[in-house]
Amino acid sequence: MDGGYTSAAAIDTASREHGVELVGPLPARGRSWQRKQQTGFAREDFVIDFDQRTVTCPQGQVTGHWVQAPTMAPYTAARFHKTHCTPCPVRSSCTSGTSPRTVNFLPRHLHELQAKNRSDQQDPAWRRLYGCRSGIEGTVNEIVNGHRMRRCRYHGLAKVHVQHVLTAIAINIERLSEQATEPSSYRPRPPTAFQRYLEERRLPRPLWWRQGK
Image 1 (tube, one colour):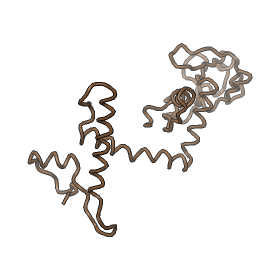
Image 2 (tube, helix red, strand yellow; image 1 turned 135 degrees about the horizontal axis):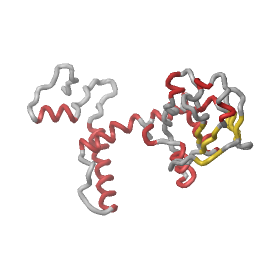
Image 3 (tube, helix red, strand yellow; image 1 turned 60 degrees about the vertical axis):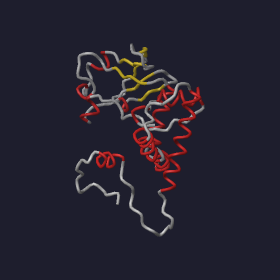
Image 4 (cartoon, helix red, strand yellow; image 1 turned 120 degrees about the vertical axis):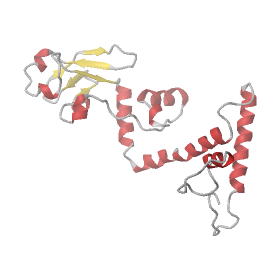
């Protein structure tokens, strides 16, 4: 899936409830000012101990004050006390307000799943697997725009399914008909849907557009 549709919760739900492996890049880490400026302590600089229910800051201060964050997302908030943050010599690199630092993080199973997925994204094997998705983008565009499949012609799932199958067969036949008869022969690519649109309406086409002849 595209990165705009993936999350640790979605990956977990797909696996646990549907038995489906959801593959996709997780969004970049949070947009806190500490990470943007790269001069402060971001969440990854804190050590989270789920067994002891404690969080340790980069300066060694430990808090066990865990509360449920007041949001719809299943976040846990670990709050430090003012006795931890007020005398801290690097306070300005951790928090800019007068309140002590609060660290938000996902529940343990989602937190570990998130960390694992972000680590896997750096693996060439994962990138090759995710690269399979790039080939479907052109096919989806061809189906939607070239065969007007954004809206179906019929009502009911059974009829819609038949239309999908017949359209897929038609696309395969069309692609097979465009294959070269000899492996060594050269055959230019056919014009795109946009090029055909310009030609049908006799609109000028820039010379740098690839020709279908």
